[in-house]
Length: 188
Ligand SMILES: Cc1cc2nc3c(=O)[nH]c(=O)nc-3n(C[C@H](O)[C@H](O)[C@H](O)COP(=O)(O)O)c2cc1C
Image (cartoon, rainbow, N blue to C red; front, side, top):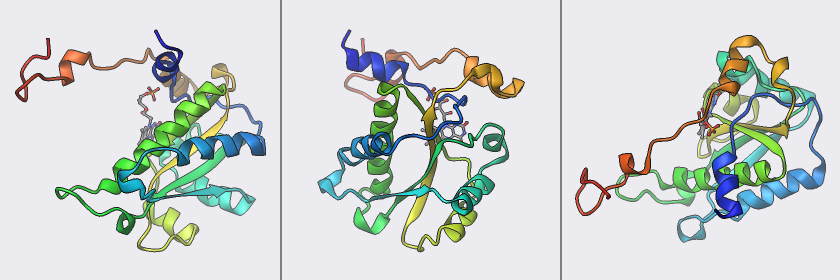
């Protein structure tokens, strides 16, 4: 198997982070992976807001869902991933900017894993708190927040959170989502 497929398959959304900040060039590499994602017509309808100052980090932490607050790491890089819908027209009634932003997020997550980091995307956040706290204008939509950092010790997590990180990762089998010739028809 190719090394890339191994990396894609092994990448995981861990919750145990070390309390050690990422170096500037590591952050740059993550952002570089993010920006090289494909997007429809190469419109790149994304922004990344890094919560850096103590006040920005407080806003970020406060906006997390109750579940995410249980593990959100103090030393990690905290990012708000934002899409700008007007920069990517809807197609077939679908919000295509979401597709582009999602691809860029995955690029970053795979790159981070390949560098030995752990990166966790979160949809569990308070939208209004994030918009208000970071002065995000109405035409820009925070679609996810992310934490990136060095891997810590799973033993240091609270018990219920630890169980999530120790759970075996699974995926649907290829035949469960791949069809041939007709929707619902078996692939093989
Ligand atoms: C867009 C997005 C939002 C997510 N939101 C959360 C979240 O709010 N809290 C959380 O613990 N995990 C969140 N996750 C992580 C998923 O639960 C995780 O990707 C999934 O269980 C598969 O596990 P894996 O990433 O380790 O393969 C999110 C992942 C994505 C891609």
